[in-house]
Amino acid sequence: MSAPVVIAVVLAVLLLIASVLLVLELLRKPADRSRVAAPPVVTGPAATDEVDRALRVLVTACDRAGRDFPDVYAVEVAADRVVLRLTTFEPEAPEPWVSRGDGTEWTLGRAGRQTGAQVAAESHPYPLVVSLGLREDRRVLVNLARAAGPVSLTGQPESVGPVVRQMLTELLTGPVGRDAEVVLTGRTATELAGQLAGARPGRLRTAPTLAEARHSGLEQPAGRAAATSVFQQLDDGRAAAEPDQPRRLVVIDAEQFRAESAGRPATGGAVLVLGEVDHAAWRFEVRPDGSVDTGALGLTVHTVRLG
View: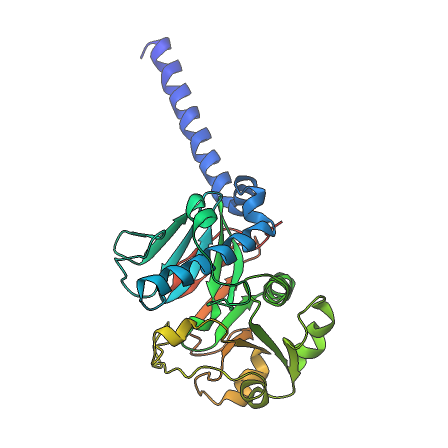
């Protein structure tokens, strides 16, 4: 083999090795990559304002079209659009919303958010929509009210703690959760109550037991769910997102939930369990690198760090 050929082969091998190492490095640090890619309009407080505006545009659009509100389990907000992810096939979206693909995704561009008519600010259809983290250039939010049972948030305590505080603070102080009610139960009340400054009056409560947390405070809409369901099936589709209808989120640690639930499905609002439990409808695992495994929802979250 001639010298030029040998040199060419060596260079090709070195280039291949360098390419493999680069790919491995990018895969090893997905959180860092997503933080760089996401603009301030996505990572900052303006993002929840955009989601709130988009959802209020949705209410008016559905009212004008005389149709039920869509069953939303997740929302993604980018610099130029808001995307709703639906539990059912809805190929016909009311203007200015646009249905994409098979009808499980509705999109509203920035122009539609700015020009679409809106309901009054005090009315909102999805108060338990809350940020989970970032996916590259977009913010990912989940609608905790749509889980068919408890939502399990797992991971190391030093990873889970900031996520819980971030979610609850957003629900209790941000525009999207203006009708949300949070009930800290048992030990979580002691650990979290003093860390949630700025909560709306009357929207943050504590309860000693799961039963009291579920059945006190604001009245909740009735729902039914099969034991193996991912999404709660409501008897009345429109009541699933009726404006002015408060939604309760019960927060409880896994040990107390296991002791008091006796395997019964959650009723009387959404339940966020801090730790691993059997038969959770949704499982979110916060990994050490800050990414989140969303399990059955199949959502990609590269990092829980929004700022």
